[in-house]
Length: 299
Length: 128
Image (cartoon, rainbow over all chains, first blue to last red; front, side):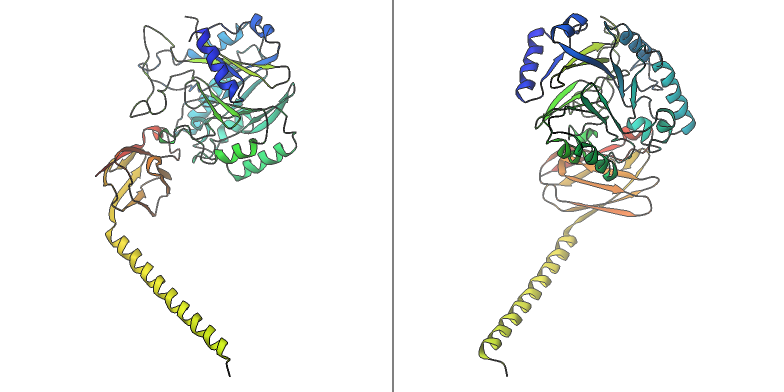
């Protein structure tokens, strides 16, 4: 992606009210740039690490990729305020013992992050076979809120129900939480699946996601960061901006671009291509969110 | 003794009643006739396979998919033709549809059912 292309993305999304700059330039988000846009803080999103996945044709470094990403985050200029993992920490297993083993192994690797404020969320691979039991034992609640420097963050669980719903109880909890906020309060939603119907043919949707979007729509500044689809994707529903993150295990094809949703094969000429994490800069008022994508390893 | 107006009202009410019953009966027959024309396709699903995996349909021809789960709860989601259903073990789930366009469309399980869940899908092909 060229700088001019990236800027066009900015204009396009800003025009819709998302106010997002998406850059694919590795190393583009430097401390100097963060100073230049007078950001107040930044955080890092990692997603879909799928620890336990094992197919050398897809990722011959399945065991080492997360560790490399942790090292890359630790090497960022300036420490992020916090890091969030938006689900599918581990690859699914039918064995509850193995599931806990993988989640524990994941937690041990994530403990290598220098920043100690780390938020964890489940994906369907972690939580759908036991309704989030193992995840909760190791990481705590599957949905929660927190406030950080003027922003209200909401972690929504759309994976513990194997049918991919948020569920009425959680929607009521969301409505109660939002009812306490001013409509100009900037809100960031963290979730695993897309809340809109991105591509239901590949199960890239949340069955009752529209109900959550209806609750969020009165708010002026809402941004959703999610995972699940293993690629960068940007979309607006009304004035709500949605940004999916890359995976740290394998990329998936663009929605509907192939007959089957299958992991893209490893390219020995471009190792780790399609994998990465992102930095999210937030301006002082919390009205402007800037996204910069990083590869696992510098090319 | 009923007034002239009351008699008139009763006659109208009786006529509406008869007409209503007639319409209801007609709709029942129409419904039965439609169901009689419906083609029934029996399907089963288990971890991680639909049987049959390829389903051939005709555009405009009503069909009922009678789907049974052989193990755990599954889903049947065919977004392109706007049908979805939960498929629970121990019961037959009937999915009615009238394909309104031709093409090949993916259906998949949308209830996470295990390690091979993401491979649990099939194809509906609709021809003229």
